[in-house]
Length: 286
Image (cartoon, one colour):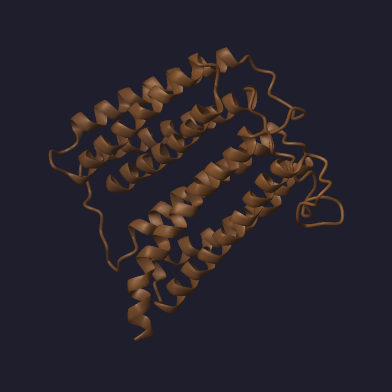
């Protein structure tokens, strides 16, 4: 009876885990966009002598609670990841055991990395590393969710050309995201007015990022044309193209509107969805 309930619960647990992995990127973005990156100016405590915000918090109560809320979100993520790992072990799902262990290990690795980010006063390299580890965990979480059912197989594309092009598509999507972190590290939303920045002209790196996005769009079109009709791969390419077009529109608009916080936040969410979609293309062509 317990095993049957666990089998039924595994899909929603893994879905929730992926949702929270994506959600912590959004909450982390909210910390940065509200200038709350140093709302808790030390680590692991929030302020000297206290693990929670205090009434006379130097950075102000709002910023402190926004930053502290993001820290609490990590505990929810740990809880769900441990639950997912426990379910996988009890069900003896050896095919996804390594992925479940990787989720727990990656989340625990995020904790000291978040501390380094605070202690280096939001150094853009530390901030980017924190984000990119989340991107890796989201990829693994997507794979975990895709393989939630025993012996679940993704319909393969047998042509080697499709596999190679899909792999190039994934690599290019990763490069777009990495360069996007450089754009972020060069832009105005640092999380705190005192945070260091990359010494790169924002217009230059933003246009490099845009050129890479255009290249990714062209590869997407080529992959669609080469994929078989009515295949799983083609369906996922269409989903990716739709999300990428929306993301490109938001990126274009935010740049010419002077990077308003709401549009930057939407762009951050869009980047997460683009990456999940790109990874699902990779899985369909694997």
